Every structure is written in structure tokens, then in C-alpha cells.
Amino acid sequence: MDLMLNFSNVYNMPTKKIKFIDCKNIRETNMYCTETAQNEIKDKLTKYSPKGIHFIDSGNYHYLTTFFTQKIKIPYSLILFDFHNDMQNAIFDNMISCGNWAKELLEKDQNLHQLFLIGPSQNTINAIHTKNQDKVIPISIENIQTPNNSCDVVASKLRKFDSNFPTYLSIDKDVLSEKYARTNWNQGQMSLVTLKKFLSFFLKKSKIIGVDICGENSYDEPLSRKIIDEKINKQTDVDLYNFIKSKIN
Image 1: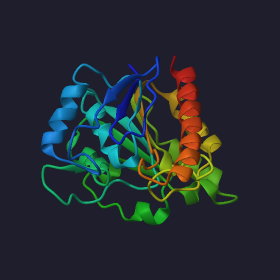
Image 2: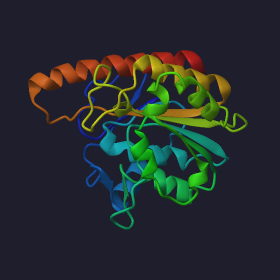
Image 3: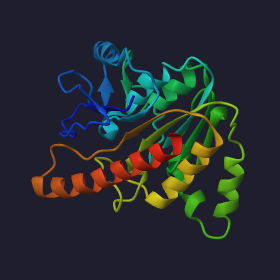
Image 4: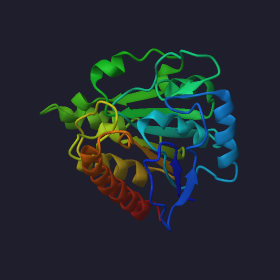
């Protein structure tokens, strides 16, 4: 089932196609998610499988990916589109955050076979230091955009993808340039066309377990800016939703 998890009030228009789950009254979830909040979220998601396309609010809540992947009981690959590596060291015990969730996944999820990280800068990739780092296959924005050799570099990395395992896709729109998304984090330079090309590769090569999309703008930003940002984000959300739906149905 396709889900829309509303934490920050950024989603205000439930749709007939997508199940709207209101989470705004769950405390201690913004960027850092306490153990109490984790249990409340798990309760709300108990009856839902990872299958489907899930909108999970702003990048502050990207850790929600783990609530879906922990339901996967077989070996799988994670394809992560993000301008950040989300593999920082944990600051607090018993908390998961938007900055460390991917590291937690790498170190604790024995079913995780591969993790493709696509879209951050090479410096951000170089900053990764984690257990099971050999499972990470990074493709930097420099790999993608460098003239002459970019196609060869990207192709060589994509050849490492093991299509024998099902795949979960996680998209943070901060990987995109501001032409295509307006987020509450610093953003990358990827175009929507390039993102779709990568998605097409993985959607064609493997069985897709599920997809999540985050990277909405801040609910608290000035109204004049908010109107523009929400319009751009909604266009991209709808575009990605329809594109992915057309490939997996």
C-alpha cells in the first residue's frame, strides 16, 4: 500500500490513491527519534508492509526508511539517493536520527546485501567510516557530472549491482538541484532526468520491494517562499510517483 506519513504538517491534502497516516502528535521525532517515539511509529505501521511508494515528510525524517527495511526478512539491496551520506556517528544511545540511520542499517541489518549511495559529493563519500563499508557502492555527483569519463565510471559502478536480490529504493529530494526540489537541507545538483535514468536502471534490473521519498520543504518557512517551494515539490512528487508506478505495475 502507498503511504503518506505526515509529521510536520507539510502534507495537507490526503489523496484517494495514498493512505494518509497522521503522525504529527508523536513527540520527539524531529531529526532525532527516541525509543518511545519509535514504538509509537511502529504501532502505526504494524499492518503495513514495505511494499508500495511511501512519502515520509522532510529529510528530518529520513530515518523512517528503517521502519520499512526492518520488515524485510530476506537479503536485499538498498539504493539511496541523497546529497548526504546519513552515516554519521550516533550522538545519543537508543536514538536513531536522520544523520546516522544508514550507518545503523549497515552495522546492524544482516539482511542488507548492498547499499548504493548516489548523489553526494566525493568529500561526503570520503567521510564515511563504518562497519561493513565494503557493502557501500558510492556514485558521487562528480562521477556523474565530470566530462569525458563520467559514463565509464558510473557504468563500472552500476555493473557491481547484484540483481539477484530484491531492492528497496530511498529517495531524498535534496539530491536534486533547486530547480526540481526545495528542501530544508543543502542540496545537490542532480537533474530529475538523471534521477529517472538511475531509477529506470534499478527498476528494470531487479524486483522492487518498496520505495520511499522524502525531502519536503520546512513547514515554518515564510509564506511567500512556502507557496513556491510546495508547488515545485508537489510537481516532483507527482512526477516521481507516476514514473515509478508505471514501472512497477
